Every structure is written in C-alpha cells, then in structure tokens.
Image (tube, rainbow, N blue to C red; front, top):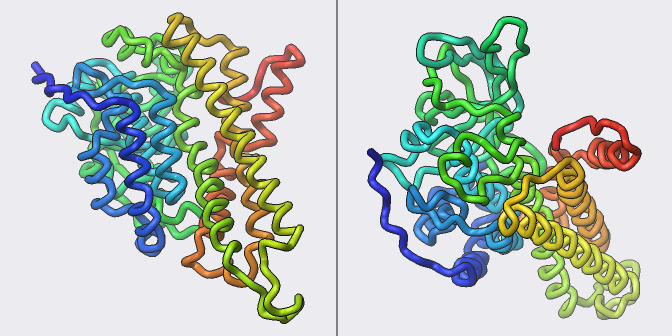
Length: 402
C-alpha cells in the first residue's frame, strides 16, 4: 500500500506570491534555456521545492487539490518571465491532474516511490499498440513531447485495440517511464525553442494494462481516477481543463513583453536617422497607440480566461455538474481566442520595437516568436476552433476536439 505523504499546508495566495517571486529568475534564464533547447533542472527543482507541482495533485498522494484558477494565476506569472518555461511547467503541473484520471493502480505506481514525479506527453495517437498478456506493446515515434528532458513519466497517445469483435480501436493514452524511451535531440525551432519538445521513440515496449485511459473516459467527467478520488476537481473534461495551462503561456508572454517594452520606451530617444535625433520615443502617437492596443488585447484575453474559469468552477466544483457540449464549446473558443488576442497584441508591440528588437536578448522578440509558435498548436488552430464553434451555434455536430 502506498504511504500517503504528509500534506504541508500552503495557501493559494502564497503559491501565487511564490510564482511572482520566481518570475525574475525565470526571465534571467530565458536566453540560456533557449540556447540549450530545454528548461534547466535548476528551475524544475525550484518549482518542485516550492510546491507548484502539488497544485492539482490528489490529496491522497500528498497534493493540494487546488482549483484551476490558482493554477493558472501561477502559470501566468511564469509566462510573464518566459513562455517556454511556463509551457513546460504547465505540463508538469497539469500532468498531476492527468495522472489522477488513470486507474488508481497506475497512480500508485507513478507516485508510490516518488510523490514528486512529474510528467509530459505526446498526445496525438501514433505508432502501434498491440494487446498482449497483461497489457500492451507499444512501438513508434511520438513527436512534440514538451519537457521530455525533465519528466519522470511520458504520456503516449495510442489507439487501443478493440476489446470486442466488431468494435473500433479506442483513442487514448498510456504512460511510460522516461528511461524506457529514447529521446531524440531534434528540437530546433523558431518559437518555444526552450521547451525541448523532442521526439521520443520506443520499440515493443511493454506497458501494463492499468496504464490505460481512453479519450472517451477523459471527456466523460467520470474517469477511473475520478471515481477513485471522489473529488470534483477531476470531473472536468480533458479539453475543458488542460489547454488552459499552455494557452496561458501566450497571455503571459504578452504581459511580460508589454511591461518590458513600456519600461524601455520611457527612457529612449531617437538617433536621428529617419526622425529628428533626440525625440522621445514615448511621445510618438504611433507608439502610444500600439501600447494601448496591446494593453487592450491583454485585458480582453485575461477577462475571457478568468470569466470562463469561474464559470467552469461554479458548474464543476461547486455544483458537481458534468459539462455539456455547450459548456465545452465555450471553453474551447475561449482557449483559442485568448491566444489570437495575445498574438495580435504582440504584433502591435513588435512592430514598434525598432532595430533593438531583433536581438536575441530582447524580451519582446522572444515573446513574439513564442506566441506565434503557440498559435500553431493543433488545439488552438483559430480556423478550426472558430469553425467548430460556429457549427455548434448553427445546430450542427461540432467537428473537432472538445
């Protein structure tokens, strides 16, 4: 039987303050992390020591079982320092919630010897999954595994073989220990460069049957883990919970870039190449307008984000309801729109940052690249998600993930 770790109380506000205090160190390391194509163990261990990975971990295994809003507030502070760090941290945090959706035997295996274990994953069903005695054999290449260098366990998306003749394969997820997978050093990209979203490879890897959960179970609000814990925190459908964690990286990137740019223009003057030398940059109406537009986009994105989180909290946590299709559509359009707003806001700032803005050490250019990379994530494709939302409003069957 797994020994239950002692839960040391830390308040929600204290966790947010800890995240805010860690932000300068995250920003300081951002350029190094980008050069290394990964987040350092130093930052991950600091986050572990400060209890961030316990935010949505079950109390049964030493977690805090706090709400989604507290989690997002912490991740927003990380992202204001560096979007890549926030992206990896978000997945490490939210995989505690995802671990908790699996059968309890799987959770005991993950946390039994290491209550601080963290995960990441490659979500798209790929490779080959064969049924064998006691479980499955997995082979294939799994891409975009953000945080593969720092995770203890890595989630793999698969199609589980049908249990009964005539059934279709069931999309879902399993977990593998990182040491059982080969991690390819192939992450060389223009944005989110520090996330280390590498490819992992396995061949005839055995995974026991208890490391299985289907996408249908994760969308139901009644997964095997939810039934075991009896906490409403684990009743959220997967797509109404997980995407917020990484979408917040874009909003935080806009926040950090806006603050950095505003501070920089206050003391800047022109050198006289195109505009008369010595003119104060902050006096240009074009600069004022771009800052105003970016700030408005940030305000709109945060309003959408926290309003939707509050709505979900009331329905799932307070009332114990299962989110219906209409609720899930609201979550999905919010997640995608807050990214579009963030990208537009960063486009405004980047257009005014000048020649200094193309330097790798410049905060704005990194935030701009990272946000554009986030917008390319399949879950946030604005054309696809807005179309899906329109289908729902027109009374059609929504085509997509929700």
